[in-house]
Amino acid sequence: MKYSAVRFSTTDIQDWQKDLLIDSLGEIGFDTFEDTDKGFDAYIPSANLDIAALETVLLGEVEGYHLDYKVEDLKEENWNELWESNFNPILVDGLCYVRATFHESHGQYPYEIIIDPKMSFGTGHHQTTSMMLSFILANDFEGKSVLDMGCGTGILSILASMRGAKHVMAVDYDPVCVDSVVENKQLNTISNITERLGSKEILAGSCFDTILANINRNILLDQMETYAACLQVGGELYLSGFYAGEDLDTLRIKCAEVGLRYVESKVLDGWCAAKFMKG
Image (cartoon, rainbow, N blue to C red; front, side):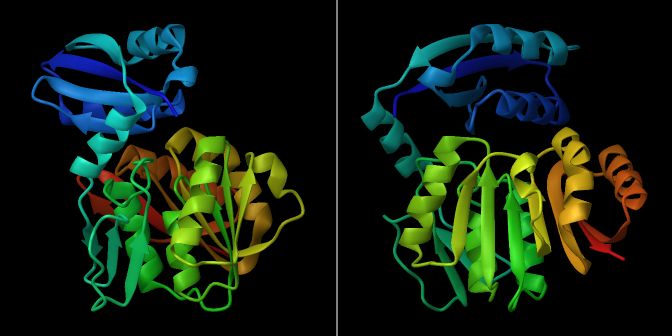
C-alpha cells in the first residue's frame, strides 16, 4: 500500500494541544505519527488523503500556536523500512512482551504478542493501548465472550484470547485494520478471533461478557448505549482514548445514564483508561 507523509512544523505548541490535533487527524484517516525535531510527521494511505478534510481539522484545532505542513509521497519500501527501524519491543507490567517479526523472541514472559509494524496504531506504544493491555492482564477473561471495538491491529483481542477468552469479535470501520487483524492473529496462532468491518450497527443482537473500546471520547459517547445494550449484566466495559479530568467525568455521567457503574481508572501522561460494570 502506498502511503503519504504530512510533515508538520510547529512552534509554541503544548503537548496537550498536539495530542488533541493528533486525535483529530486520526479521525480523518491518519494512522501513524512520529515526533520530529520540528514537530511531527503523520502518515496516511495515499488514497485516503483528503486535503480539504485536513484543512478543516487545522482550522478547528490550531489556536494559540503556529503550524505549517508539507505533503510527501512515500515509496512503499521506504515506509516498511521506516517502521522496522523505529519499532521497538515493549514490555507491559513485566508480563506482556510486544514485538515485531524481526525481533528476537523472549520466552521468559507469560505473554508474547507479535504485531506487524506496518500498521503502527495498536502496537502498544501509545499510552491508551498500554493501559488497556494492563487492564486485560489484571482482570479475568477466562471463558468470556469479548468485543474489541475499534480494534486497530487486534492487539487487545490477541491478549484477551491469550488470557482465556472463549471468543473475541474484533470490529473496525477501516478495512486496513480488519486485514491487519487477520494477519496478526495468524502470526500469534490465534483461532478464536472473528474480525468484522463496520461500526455499532453490526452489534445488534450481540451479547458480550466484556467489551474493550479504545477509540476517542466522542465516538465512545455516541456508542455507549450500544455497549450497554450488548453487555451482560455483571459484565465489564474497559474504555480508553480520552484524557483524565473533564473527558473522564463526561464519560462517567454518560455511563451512569445507561446503567454502567464506574469502578476504577488509570492515568498515563494525561491519557486515561477506565473500567465500568453493568449492574
